[in-house]
Image 1 (cartoon, one colour):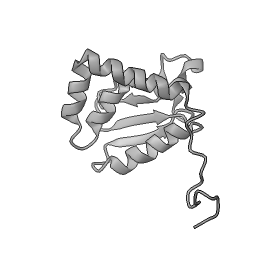
Image 2 (image 1 turned 60 degrees about the horizontal axis):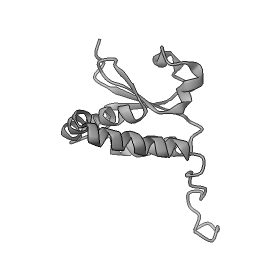
Image 3 (image 1 turned 90 degrees about the horizontal axis):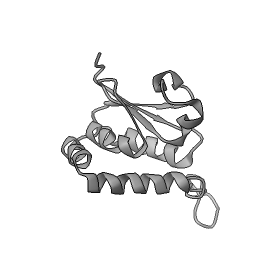
Length: 129
């Protein structure tokens, strides 16, 4: 059963994940991606152990297929305007996918250290604009 929309599931407590979800929301000009938190959508992640759900972001394609982490990047790109061709290229290239997976692994290993700690509206000196 195809719904016609993609569902991006992210960890609401991860700064990088939250920033990515906001960027995806802004870039999704066709409104094909529904952004939800993993914490409120565990029913969509059947088959993934509870202790592994927050390890990565997940995409549910319109077909119902679930992909996770670096493997989900081509699916996410395909959902964006003008991304279908690039998503297929990524998925079909072992070399590119190994780089995507490696970069995704880097981000997840250091996600606590990579969170931007400057609040919106603050200057580098810490005062509000």
